[in-house]
Image 1 (spheres, rainbow, N blue to C red):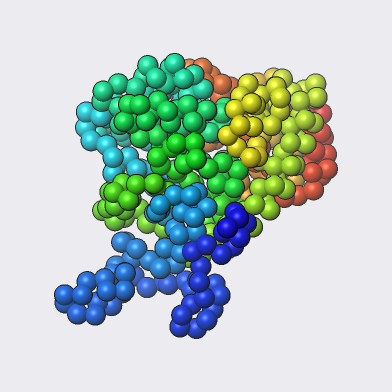
Image 2 (cartoon, rainbow, N blue to C red):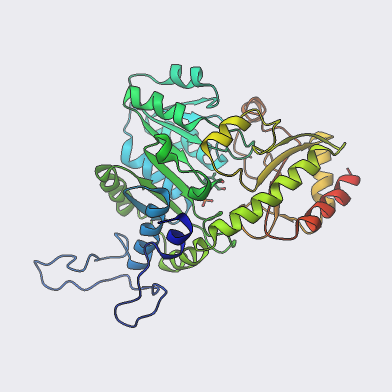
Length: 383
Ligand SMILES: Cc1ncc(COP(=O)(O)O)c(C=O)c1O
């Protein structure tokens, strides 16, 4: 079955009671137990353990990623935390890419370490660095590609190979490209994480996350962490996300085509120092992107002349693009990572990882490309 057929139909069957073709929103917290010795006779008991609407979304995401099973969460961060809770104990070691979503950095840096887990941040584009960071206590190598916000691309198959040789889990955040453009399991990864808040929902309407796995035993451990910590997704969020995912491929194609044109426009602009977009030949990992993904995505990074001041002037002058933190939806958004999404990362580490003061991150939406470019042109004139 093709991806587009799966994104519409996987996980969803007409409701056996009413025939409704959309999965009902099962808002109940409690599911009846047939008798004392028939616990969860219909698969559900208490909503912290599972919910039929959420399950439909999990089945769809499992099918789209090509995994064995998945669990959904109240946010992308809750998904990441569930993986850490399920797999780590004091004394373990984790290797994390030096450019990852700021919240992932913060959790690893401030919470994993608090519970006795050692964390090393490495340049995940440099396989020698990754390999030499992996030691006998390493349990996870965590990657994100393309990475938020520099759009640095990691060779996922190369990291998976290092992990397989050493018996370490390769956990990767696939939020930016989604399974429509990139399927990390085909590149050897063990666990795929999503913030469904972004492209999967696609409408700035929900906050959610998901973890897809290949190993049923790991699924059980992660689901156990979820029920224990109460990191669950709500039925309403699952329902909205189920509808959003149905148009994922169409949105991704249109938004990415627009992003490519915008990246080219910015590349030729004299107020722009450089552009980070994996689709440009000038991107340092352009060839890896072409090899491991079928599209380049809708996120574009660029450095305006004049550092923080230039960035601020641009943000203040821009119209049509909304200054906001989210990404991946139909509305085009513009973000200043240093003061917004990545404020938790110390400046020295940020700059070393390429998250510079004037870096601007664009999430390209579904508006007319000409309108988006016209708005950028006007705002750049004021820089
Ligand atoms: C790549 C990536 N992963 C994870 C997250 C966290 O997701 P959430 O905001 O849904 O917790 C984000 C949020 O921006 C993100 O960009």
